[in-house]
Structure formats: structure tokens, C-alpha cells
Image: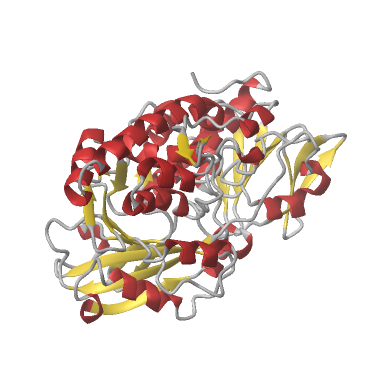
Length: 496
């Protein structure tokens, strides 16, 4: 039985803790805040409740696997998991509206043909076939296996099978997601639909590699799910699973130093000066925090993926509305920006200020547990913003944009609360409230994350700032990978 100290109680960290406890190790989690879940938080006020982090769950199989492997108990026995259908409604700049079914390629093709006109659906369907090929090529190395020692193979090869594009006697293949949209989809609305998947993860589609197509494929192939009561219920269930496996949680206990000797971890030290011995330390904290508390122990060599912390953040506005949610309302509506180029310039450089009319995601869950009674509705708006951005009047812009999706929004509004990047930073410790994106291949390795192992024996990293990157499925897989590396050692090659 090894003594294991886990730094942080985020979702990836708790996933690792539960798996390691089942393997027979003594696990203690040190969390600087007063609760678990990291970015998966909750706001409650006047009988209303809102998720302050993710509002939908892709790839629930990752978390189903955790519950089976740590107790032979289905995830559905611990939370009420509901498939969202339709998966989303989309309002495009020209006023076109498309409502897309969940996990149905044929249904999506039909819906897009009906909304946008043929051959829009067929083009999107053909794109999904190519995206599936990219998914098949990258699923294991980017999600299910520890990062390859020869990671540059992933950095150099573009796995998306782009269609040859002829222009001015030249034949080219798309290397960025924006080029895929322009050359293969050939419809501004389809391009906006595609680029929206990258933007939702804080990626600039103009520079994101073509294989970012897998982000769209994951949704349309495996569907989107909602946890009754909000995604915070998933965090609660994972925390309870940890407790059932005798994982110790020490909240309000900030780790300030990782202790090492002779190239191996020996324990941790907390802010009050207390030290705890450990055979393994698993750090589920952002890059900057880890470098501060571990120093040379995590410094990357030239042959390793460099640690990168730059990423945009989220601005979220929670709305308490009078009046019931109309029957047939889509759980999620994406209101696309009228000027995509201006929005991308504002986010990723070149613009003169915040985008006045950004792409806004509107979540309207059909969940009586989130409202004080049948005559109310809880709505969450979110948009990608630069890390460290102040809310200012930008929250009002989100409400104005959301009015396209929620008729009479201003008249129904009881109150609203704004969650700016500073609140994300407070919950996660990430500078400026940055939110990491999932790992992607190609692009010179720019979107890969550092391996879960470090140069120091016994020190591992978990969560969105390490392999395989950000997002709830990736967090769960990072926990599985780290647990495998601790239990089986360097020969561990991932799930079978």
C-alpha cells in the first residue's frame, strides 16, 4: 500500500483518487478551497440553481467506466443521466434557424437540408465521415493512452483526410479548421456551425488544425447528455465514490510545496507548515501553480512537450426568469455572431476591443430541480472571452444577444448574476481564469499537453493542463491514465 497525496479536488484528480484507492492505496486529497469539483461548481439563490462550469456532458462512457471500475455500480445508479434531444438549435447571422437531433447523422443531414437547403446536409454528412477518420486515428493516442515518448509524430502528422481543393491551377488541402469550412462545406452557416465547436473550447478556427473536426464529431456521434439537477451532481457522485473508497479529503488545505529528495517525491507541505509524507504525488493544478510549488521537479526538457498555460476564459451570466420554460424549447441554443471575423480578432488579437455581439450559448434545461416553482425558468448564457477580461458591460451584450433565442427575455428577467474570468480563476487557480482545450494533433504540437509523468519519480500531473487536455471526458481519462501509470508503472499503455 502506497501513500498518495493528490493536490486539488477537480474532476480529473478525484477520478485518479477513486481508482487508486480501489487499487489498495491510501489516498489523501488536499484542496485549497472549501469544496470539490474544481470548475464544476454551482450557484444557488432564491430557489434557483445554476451550473457555474460545464452544463452538458459529452462522452459519458468515460464516467460510466469510472463507476464500474471503482465499484461495479452503473453511473446511472448515482445520477439521473438524460440524453439531450435535440442536441442544439442554431441561430445564424442571416436569421436562419436549424434544430439538430442528438446522435443521429441521418437526422442531422435531413435537418440541415431542411433549414439551409440542399446540399448543405450532404456536405455536413460527408464532413462527418472524414471527421470520423480523424477520430479513429487519434482517439487512442490523444485520449486513451499516455502521451507517446515520440510525441512529435503526433505533432507533425495531420490526421484529418482533407479533400483536395483546386484554386488558380493549384491543388491544396485544408490545414486549419477554417479552411475545412471554407473549402469543403462552402456555406457560411455550415462554416459557422463547424467553427463554433472550436470556439466553444477557446480555439481560434483560423489556426486550429483541421483535426479539430473531431470536436464536432464527438458531439454528433456520441451525443450530449445532461445530469438531472445539473452537472454539479456528477461532481457530487464522484466525490461520494471517493469517500466510499476511503479517500480522505482535506479542504481549505493549500499545498505550497512538493517535497523531493534524490530525484523522487517524498511528500507535500501545506500553507500552515504541515508536511505529509507520500510515495506518490498527483498534481491536479494549473501549470503556473504547479511550477510555483514544484519548481525544478516539473521543469520540462527540450525533448518534452512544453507546458503552455495561455488560453481564453469564459464569461457566464445566470438569469432568473419569471414564466415557465415553453414546451419544446431546445436545451441548448447557439446564437452565432453576426461578424465571425470581428469576434475572432477580438478574442485572439487584431481587434480594438471586446466583440459587441459575440457567439452566445444559451442553456435552458428542462429541470424542475433548478427553479423555485413551475412558473420560473433558470437560464445560463456563456461566451468565450480573453483570460483576465473584466465583465464590464459585456454581460449586457450577452443578454441582448440571447434575446434572439429567448423572446421577451428582458421583460421576464427577475435578476441576473455574472461570473467573470476572475471567478473562474478563484475556483480553478488558473491565471486569468484560462480554460484549457482538449489536446489535438498536428500544429507542431502546439495543442498537445505535457505528459502525465514528470522528470521526478513519483510525481504525476492530472487534469486539463496535462495530457489529454481540457473537458470533462478528457479530465476523466487523465485520471484513468495516471492511475494506470502509478499502478502498472511506465509499461502501462492505456485502457484496452
